[in-house]
Length: 427
Ligand SMILES: Cc1cc2nc3c(=O)[nH]c(=O)nc-3n(C[C@H](O)[C@H](O)[C@H](O)COP(=O)(O)OP(=O)(O)OC[C@H]3O[C@@H](n4cnc5c(N)ncnc54)[C@H](O)[C@@H]3O)c2cc1C
Image (cartoon, rainbow, N blue to C red; front, top):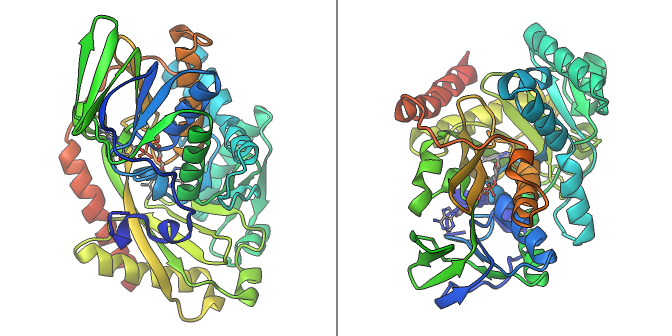
């Protein structure tokens, strides 16, 4: 995408093409105009179009251009926040509602993939949250206890079973979550876009919304070459927001996250590393993640931006870390490398915003947007279809607030990850 090999990396090489979606031209009308062609916007579009609404989706660049085309592909259940802490943060009503919705969100992703026959390397094999040291073990034990008490299919695995499943003995144990899984993230986004087109909605790529105006009860959104008048606007632009919803971006601290993909590992290594094809992330503060793709490439990621000195530092660290994690791996060769920005909020929870009458959106998924984006898109559709009132939404409506020292925190995240990986590679 955009001829930048470090924007979408492996996913761009192996995803089927997006539907043809020429830029918006002239004046058009719809019931709902959706701004942003990632999981949130496309899921909203799909559910609205299937219910008979006239929908136009406007994507600034291309479907999956944002986080949807760059991520690790872990279909997680729930958020970072401990399940038992959520009701304390959001209050019991929203807390329990959000837990229930996000705990079950991977199921919606898997159902949509199956219903719409989306070829996106779906693996329903669970994820392993791997514990680093005693602190990590305590964290996953608490998570296991809290999710189990809510009836979730999670299992605590000891160090030996974790080593067998991972293919290396770096971890003190792990939490296996069978609600979760992995997919090819850009293929999922593009598959959703095809399903949206099939359901009768109109898709326009290369169509950044630059302004909005209100005319009575209707809204008009304007792109460089056209405009759409609609009753509702869904804002689904998240961390890649441009144009009138810059405040969505300004509410978040951006955390850069990179991935390296090896060449296909071959049968022997493929049988020893993640033989069960779970997705993995660890409990470190500067976390790492890894998973296999269908061709047997190991995709390994962590915090950092692949630019300037970061490129060499993170690449060297990734090679060294893979050799430590998997001594059997031999010489490590990377076939693709890419990175993106994760939108973090101050309490690590997503946001529901009502920007004006009939202008709504979810954002701020803190690096966990595949299942939440999909389920929140459906939630917005249900709200617009009068199936879910504002009081019944999974989050309270809030106004975007810029966190203090945002710019400094972003510099610190990028520089701090380089320092940590530079030091870790040498000592
Ligand atoms: C490197 C990385 C790793 C991650 N790993 C995971 C993971 O393993 N699991 C997980 O669940 N989540 C992960 N995430 C998070 C996940 O990718 C996001 O939360 C998710 O993509 C958010 O979906 P979205 O549809 O809301 O936004 P996006 O996918 O970011 O889509 C927003 C779209 O809006 C468009 N846009 C912006 N402004 C305008 C405008 N003015 N007009 C028109 N269009 C506009 C953008 O071009 C973009 O395509 C990761 C993110 C990154 C960057």
